[in-house]
Each structure stands twice: as C-alpha cells, then as structure tokens.
Length: 463
Image (tube, rainbow, N blue to C red):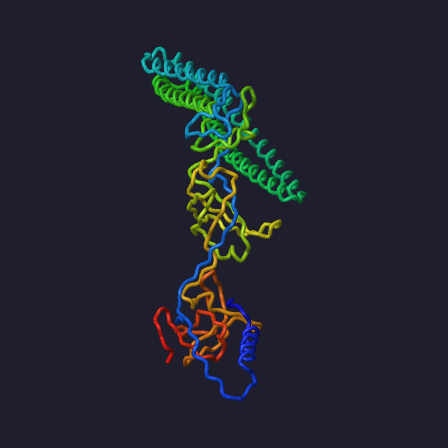
C-alpha cells in the first residue's frame, strides 16, 4: 500500500469531497486534524548485503602418485574411495632385479672392506700384491660407475620421452577442447587438461631429479676412471709410497662401494610405493600383473582435512570479493565456515563469469568431492552512510522521494538511493544527518499536510 501513487490518493480525496458536497453551499469546511505519523532522525550507519551462489566441492590438496621404478605390479592394497594414512603402502612392483643389484652391491662392499682390512695388516713384502688388488678393485668400481652412468642416462631418456608424450597429449587435449561447444564437454575437457598439466608438472620434477642423478653418476664415473688410472700408476712408486697410496685408494674404494650399496637400497625402496599424505583414493591406474611406469600416475590421493569450494560470480560481485574473506557453506542443513583463497582475474568465455575458490573447514565425509553446495558471502558494503528504513522511500516518475518533517508539515523531498535490503536503504543525496524522516504511511500523507510526529518511540505533538 505504501507505494500508491499521488494520483490515486488525489482521486480518493476528490471522491471524499463529492460525498460531503463538493462545490456545495460555499460554507468553509472545518480544517482537518494533523496526521499522526512515525518519524526518525536520519543518521549514519553501516549496511552489508549478502549474496548466495551455487558451488562445487573438490579436494583442497591432491597428489598424483607416479612410481620412480617400472615393472610388473605384484600387489595393490587400496581401491577408489578407500581412506589412506601417510606412509601406507599403495602397491608393490616386482623387485627381484633390484634385490639382486642390492646383493651384488653388498658383496662388492664386503669384498672391498676385506681387501682394505687385509691391505692395512699386510707387511711390506705383500705391497705388490696389495697394489694389484687395488687396481682390480678400482677397475671394478670403474665398470660399476660406468654401468650406473649408463642406467642414469637411460632413466633420463625415458623421462624426457614421457615429458614429450605428455606435452603432445596436452596439446591434443587443448585442440580438442577448442572444438567443443557443449558446456559439459568443455568442462570435462578443462578438467582433463588440468589433470594432464599436473602430470606434466610431476614428470618435469622427476626429470629434474633424473638430471641431477645423471650428473652425479657422470661425476662418479669420471672419478672412478681417474681412480683406476691412479691405481695403475701407483705400481711404479716406491714400497713405502705404495703402501700409503694403497691405503688412500682402499678408503676411496670403500666409500664408492658404500655408495653403491646406498644407491641399490634407494632403488629397491622405489618398488614399494607409499602415499606421502593422508586422505582418500580418488583415482587408481594400476592393477595386479599390469605394468607400472613413470610415464603415468598410479594413484591420485585427495587430502580430506579441508575441501575447496568453487563458484562463479559476475564481474560486479567479483569486484567486491577479496582473499581471506569469510564465507558460509551449506549442504543438507549443515553449515561450514570457509575463507576465499582465489579471486579469478580472467572471465570464462562460455559463461561470462569469474571463478572464485575458497577453502572450507570440513573433511571429505562431511562434504564429499563433487557435490553442490550453497555459498553465502558478503558482497556490497557501505560504512558511515545515511541509512533509513526501506519503507520510508516512495517512487514516482521523477524518482525516489521521502517525506521530511519541517515546521510540523510533511515536505516531499527527492533523494538519491544506494544499496538496500529488506529493511534498510542507503541515501546518498537529498537529505542530511538529523533530518526527520516520516517512516509510516497514510492515505492523507501528501506534500505540505500538517503532521503530528511520533519520533523514534517518543511522543511529540509537533507543536
């Protein structure tokens, strides 16, 4: 009723005059009593608006498990949907070859230690024999280092091939995604691209590690070659010099043999693959008797401690949001607190909206990955502005207006409005602090009528 136009009010008044003898005897009509109205002084305050959005839940942290070794899978221990704890063994690869290499390295070290012990306790007359043993040991280390160098090079080549293959796959996915027009397929294509990007990132990290291992193996090979040549040259030294040089060479041989054992133990550990985080299995790509390779992931583990809510907003709302801003997430009557972590800078070409991400303090059982949720966030905010009741504002063809009490009369005053909710509205122009704004409606409320204002709960006769 408060939005009745002045035109309709005028008709009602005219009709009332007709019933009382409009244009009758000419006698003066008795003056009408002042209108009783509610009013309050315009003051400054804050107004915050909230908006609701539909979002999708996904894990905040997910890890792609890519094996460092390759071979036949002998056992798997977890399926999609299973919960895992950090350090749990996900699957095992046939490690018979790696165990043989470890045993060989251990025997080499044991032999080198025995040779060192024998050399240190042998008398002067056995120096030549010790030198021959040293040469043989150095030669064996040289060959072993050469094998390790070649193996490191082969491993690096495999990872380079895997990186190239993944880049090619990513390019094909992007080209395929450009040809899609269906939003669902586009979303699926984008998800696949994102997953492939993660795979490529992991492969590049592994390639970087392989390059470091290759460089280390190459350095060890060069060192072993120098050691071997030095061992042969030491035969020409004097007996005393031979004994001293033999000790140094044997110490080096022991270190290299120990390094061989450590390397073999590390290689063997790659055949039992564990999870680096606790969470839930969301993808599995290996089966018993199948092949595990470093060219593709074996498992994907999603962390369950916190989840990510992703939603889309218009540009105007996007400009009101900021990182670390709090939000509320609701699903099936349950509410969860969240904080905005990412405000998108690029608009989605298909939807024309910006992507917003927030971390939600809930685990994967409370908010399973993939479900839809309702998200509530503060958007438009004003502070220390003139705020009056929403019902005090009226509208006509010229714009918004209010009635202000001046000298016990209602004065129609046009105003400029800002943001509003169901109860309050921001006034940016037209009235000032302290102006007495009428907040109640009456069919007799017109510009210039006499009023008796009840101000903010306190009675006033307006005189």
